[in-house]
Length: 295
Image 1: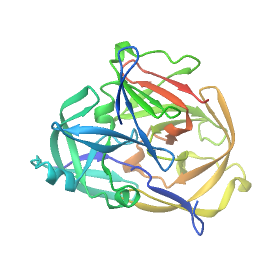
Image 2: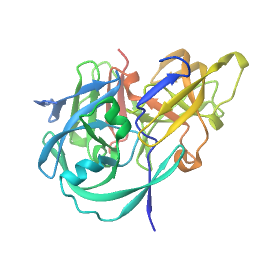
Image 3: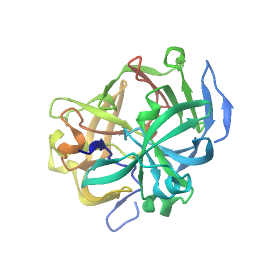
């Protein structure tokens, strides 16, 4: 029997139909800092090594629980298959070959990490240098900081993570290797949503069965198309009247409505929250909290 792995996917392109819509550095407080580059204004790309080889460019994707590598990279490194695994997506499922490799980011390493290989044609069309996606199976072993302003990422021992001065501290939940942030809205079926913190999306995404459509004027006539490395989908957008995150009130926010997908969202997930919405954020899942700075 194949094991299932959840993968919504890094959003490679997002547009309205008919219109175009790491050098290692010393860290602070015991952390290891690496510079990252941004692709498309929101994707975080870091340099990692696999089995001591590289470095290779990987997208940091907090929305997937599995680290993925390009099939060409798996062949280049002569990795030996150890089975196959099912990837669940918004539009279906796909089998991927499973490998085991040692992965390192800066001075932090995973030992033997299970990685899945897939073709990355869509990502390569955006940036040929990208060779994989770094998922939560690696990241949740540490506390991690994403600093979009300074384009810097840091990893910490969870017991030594720093406090972000001027940030807002919130409790988080981790369910099936998904980082859940609670946000409230009058458009929520239950007045609040559990949103997955996702560094692979540029906008807030809400599953359709979790929204109360308060008024037709909130809906947009324009359809929106987005594609990942595994799926393509057209959907609708709406103007969200309010969204409250970390005591910050966001008004009239354009969000993307995702079709309900039991295989992907589960019973506890209401949507996706882009990490790039914040200027800096620290996630310490082992201690059960996050710290956000908007500006």
